[in-house]
Length: 139
Image (cartoon, rainbow, N blue to C red; front, side):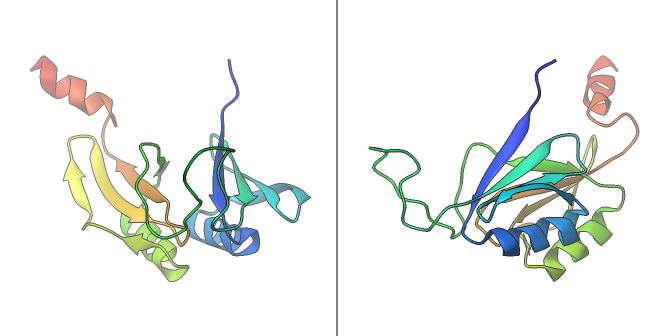
């Protein structure tokens, strides 16, 4: 099996550590230097990478890092046991709830953003989780 890691550019690593450990109960694994911290406690490690605003993500990209709310086709989903409590905990350390919590066939979903502009979702599964979708289609 291939190991997966998620890497998030942030403009303030220490503030990001506080956010992700308090909002999602992740733990600091290794601190590689002042600009790179590994978070553990989920099914995938998250590396917080300190990158200054306005710097290019790669040479010749034609774009600059911007930590205002932005859209990207990739986001993280975090499965929680109690979505209301998880939303409140995340908001207490700077997250924004972008839409009301909504019911889906597989459970409840909250669309959120972190203080660094990244979108993420909180999921509270019900029944068979995503397999509830297949169960409904079989009927």
